[in-house]
Length: 127
Image 1 (tube, rainbow, N blue to C red):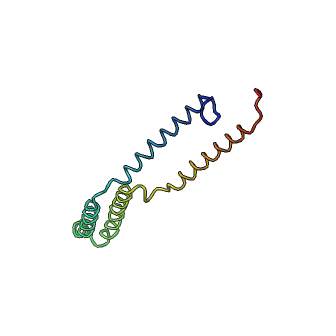
Image 2 (image 1 turned 135 degrees about the vertical axis):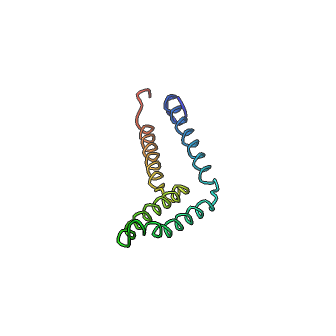
Image 3 (image 1 turned 30 degrees about the vertical axis):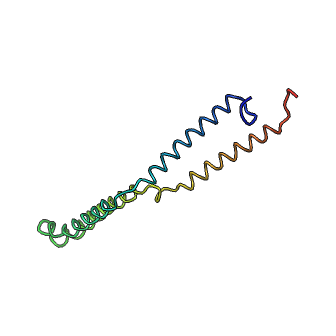
């Protein structure tokens, strides 16, 4: 018999799963604790602001007053959207719903414990 009254095959599989979980947890902690230089984000934001503020001056001769405003707004929305996506990617743990993953893992662990308890309480044929 393996640990906790389990047969060796299941015991080894649980051990391997826990080892993989600890490895992934360690990798996530390393990612989370890696400092990100905030100058990159600030510089990108300033470049996008400068670009979108100067864009109407470049578009006005080609599009006139009627086309400059809509074209500038569309381009600005696109660029600011890309900047926002980049900012969110820099800090994935702030924007991902990690609590849902944690709740799922917790539920699975509780289910395994319940099943193990029921198996341990069930009468065995070898008694």
